[in-house]
Image: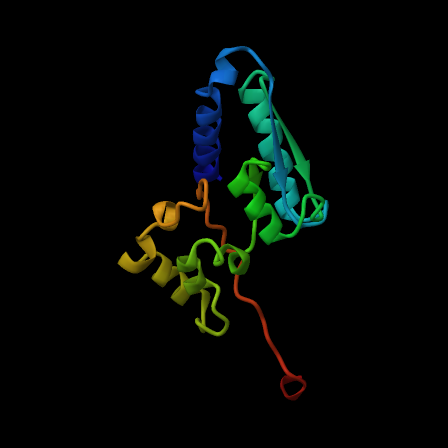
Amino acid sequence: MRKGTIVFTGLLFLFLLSSQAFAGKVIRMRFGHVAPPMHAQHKAAVYFAQYVERESGGRIKCSVHPKGQLGSHLQMLEALQVGTLEMTSVAGPALTEFVPQVAVVSLPFMFNKEEEMYALINSPIGKKSPRNSSPRVCLWEVLQITGLRPFSTAKDQ
């Protein structure tokens, strides 16, 4: 949570440095994602929106749009590119269209255990940040690990 707070504070700082913030205008931003309202991802987005508004003294208003109201993962990433959306949270496979390096942790059956995945992420290869690897992506700040995906067949059951 501490790392997330630092990231959110950094984003807030960037917004406060904009000319609109110094002009005293209210800055409006939209945060889109595809999760339903009861999902942890949505709850985190709502927390972020409240945090930004509180820490900016109300000068930044962030609205959260769940359930793909603003489009699919790919559509929201494209909206980021053209500046019609300020923030989104997307799954790794969608992000690989814009930042191919993300594919290394999105490959199915790549890891047998979570520890193997974390070992790769914390290795010199994993520490090569894709943040500046693609001029098509505005800002990459957080890599969220949601765990391994279980797969089974009728034979397994």
